[in-house]
Length: 228
Image (cartoon, rainbow, N blue to C red; front, side):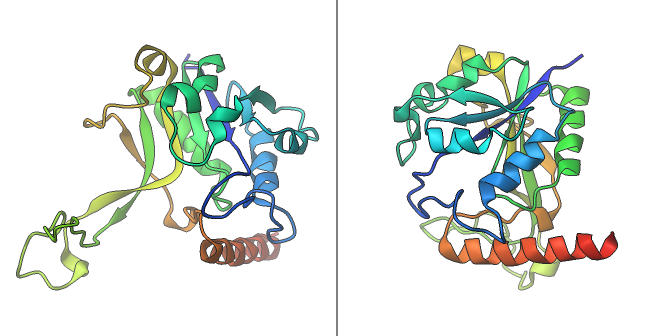
């Protein structure tokens, strides 16, 4: 049986929107929303919160199913740090695979994560990532077309379909990381693509995104209340 755990990496030192995880958000906070879901994910072998700040570890105390993984302070410095520093705590995860769950995506559902875990157990690729389909036209910095290359095409309605990374979750193989300090090869099926509902991918990185996600979360909560 494939062993799969789930982990949230949390810090308050984000550069684009400092302390976004603990700011008031729709009567709660992004980190509390994520922890409440994490605590109920009994379909994972372990449920981890990885932190270097006691303030964030305190948030997990009411949740009896969440294990704390302590990180070195160097791992949470703003910017992109070397993998062997930033992700050193991954070596202490007790499972074959682990799902990195984005705490800044408050609309991500447990149903979607359960489905992803089932896909991993069934197919056992080296890695996975969450995606949504797109027909957007994308150019590189020199103006070369990267997606739609048909000069006669003037509408996205009939453009080729590509898949955009949603960043709501990624799935990694622990032994591959231990051997290479890398998370995937960026070759076909590494990561394998798991399509997720577009309404779940609100990702908070800026003040405007915070406001949009908060409004969407309130609307979702009202919809669930009405359905009940």
